[in-house]
Image 1 (cartoon, rainbow, N blue to C red):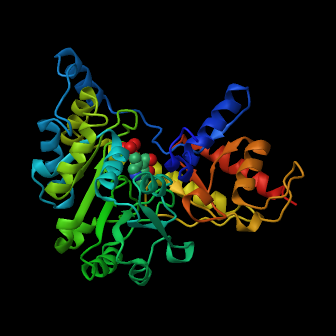
Image 2: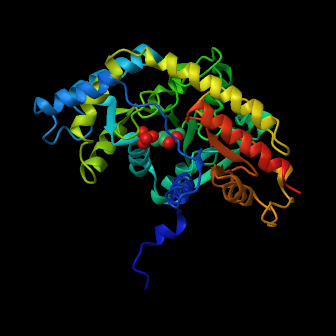
Length: 401
Ligand SMILES: Cc1ncc(COP(=O)(O)O)c(C=O)c1O
């Protein structure tokens, strides 16, 4: 009898973490490697946020357990954030704070899924969604959106995917891994479908809300369709926009009974997120935000650089996304060719392996995100490094036979 649980056979370790580890190992071995795998800003946490954390430690506000799903001050800051930035009214009792957006999403799935319940996940998707759903006993149902539709699903596709067993639709806009973001009218098309199916809830992962370019206006389902407010969980966090991935604070607003159930799960697993991180997040949400447009100007420049340089690489096609810090080019034009090593490129995984071997550029293959042959580049890295990486990709593609 196997000692490990059966559920483990259904899940796989995160592919994005895998490629980052591989690049790190090559670097340690002395290779000149450029890692474009990690999904986090290269900017450091702003000083005012660090200071708030240091003060919390000095004042003794960080040394004890806190309320399981967030201190009152942070819940108040989250309530104010949802009102100010999204026009959403939540009470503190409708707010859940966890150890990163990841824990909040996971708690919500564990709190609601029974064996066999279905969760609709538009593909390409963040690698963790299907595995989280399976860990929680549910069935992920992928609905594929291709580059031709801007990597966004259409209302008809959503309609077709809904069954009596559907519990959630997970929407992630702007998206990891494509950077695509739904406009208000595109979201309205989807929320109109959901209005016809009252048993389906929507989990909106708005983690990249602030990272949008070219005057794109971000919106979220509960804002677009107030009639869905009661069955929407609006998830967000400080990781990406506030450069705080290491602090591990995420949050959500939603229906009180769901929020209570999520707190019960957290109380029996991890308890409160680190107290010092909660105080840092209070400052992030309430404090100055002038660094966000500054970062965005740099991210937009890098996006444009990547899109332009990748579209000049032989066999690569790179759409221009609205947000986040990812591009998701197709490498279909390289399939069937021979790498410098003599190995044939049959899949996107072969492509990224050969690229890492030949040119020391680490990107993530598309297949684990639910659509290939593609690869994901995170452009949250210094511009000259990014330029060098794109030159290497161009050289690699030109050398394929
Ligand atoms: C789409 C998406 N949702 C959620 C998360 C989790 O964020 P956190 O670091 O706050 O757990 C990530 C992180 O990569 C993400 O890309």
